[in-house]
Image 1 (cartoon, rainbow, N blue to C red):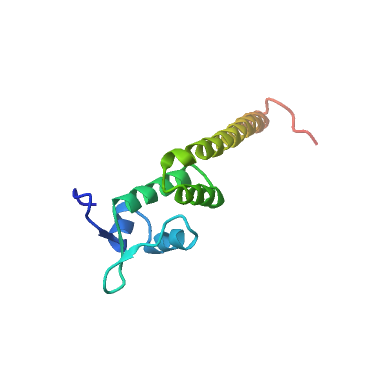
Image 2 (cartoon, helix red, strand yellow):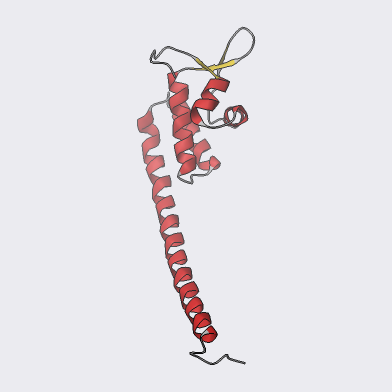
Length: 136
């Protein structure tokens, strides 16, 4: 986006800037994550600085593994409360805390799986090198 904060950016330029497709932006509008965009005379969607920041926020939440349903809850709360970020902060923290817990469980599960794979590999290696008998 240009240096001028009042500068509008068209959908194709915004998509390219963020490495997503125009269809993704339209989809986020359809499901209520983004508000309806301003349009040029020909109908081309345009976005202001606040729209770009909101889309970047959505993409960051997606990168963190937050579900679309959770994002929709945040967006609805945000819009109902005149787009005051402080109104969504408690819910966002709750969602992030739940997500951290899920990530911790996945990490523990993967660490356990890794231990099993290493032990199994070691056993196979020992069998191949005739250090232990093959169990029949």
